Length: 174
Ligand code: IMP
Image (cartoon, rainbow, N blue to C red; front, side, top):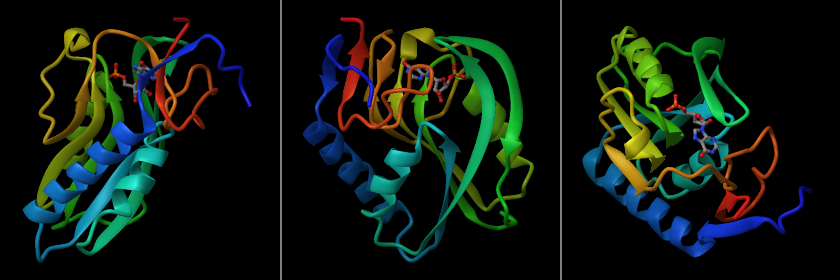
């Protein structure tokens, strides 16, 4: 377990739970009578994916992708694949699930990559967005919270591999 004395709670567990339920409701409505495949972006989105999928009432499958673009707190701008989806996404309703969109470079790379797979539909669901940091336009269909430019941790988000286990989202060093 990591020390939490220098972390200020930014989004409470209850606020996150409620918003995740609302996002799932929107997805249930939009895809009524259809199947979706959630594609979670590892590692940060694993808790968000787990909570989101448990509120989905439509048929759902889950896949994960893993790419590398971050070291410490600053984006390197370099994106490379560690893991891609294991099944064909041809003709499928795909929802890319991300923890946070910061510069937007990671997710635009993934959206471009997913579009090449001849999916039926492609949507983006992100728990957080730091709009002021965006370097590219990113179309977020299901957004949890827009936040200011702070480095946040918890609920899957890490600082150098730590703090993912926190049930809330906090700001480190405040
Ligand atoms: P982007 O390519 O700059 O949009 O970076 C997105 C990725 O950077 C996210 O999936 C996170 O892994 C990481 N990231 C960006 N901001 C934060 C933050 O405040 N806390 C933890 N991870 C972050």
